[in-house]
Length: 123
Image (cartoon, rainbow, N blue to C red; front, side, top):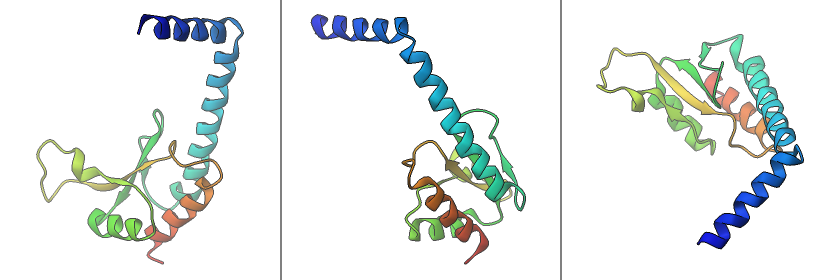
């Protein structure tokens, strides 16, 4: 309703005026940059990792996304597959896993990343 909307606008205005919003945005950017850097450190040297310059997802190039997706799901990892994003799927298109690094909780992210490394290494 109108009263709730006005309170929300006042709260946002207070966040902006107090610079708390800026601090929050800077902290988020730093957290996501650290996650991205860790992902690149663990995966980038051994396999193709693309699409990491912006956003909160990376594309990890793989030879058989269906097999790796099944292994990832067996490890409790939620990753997407590039094949879902083609307008017209075809057997000769590049394959890859879409890895979101913004979603996992802070304390479980390193563990989830290590599970992904095991999945990609086939161990």
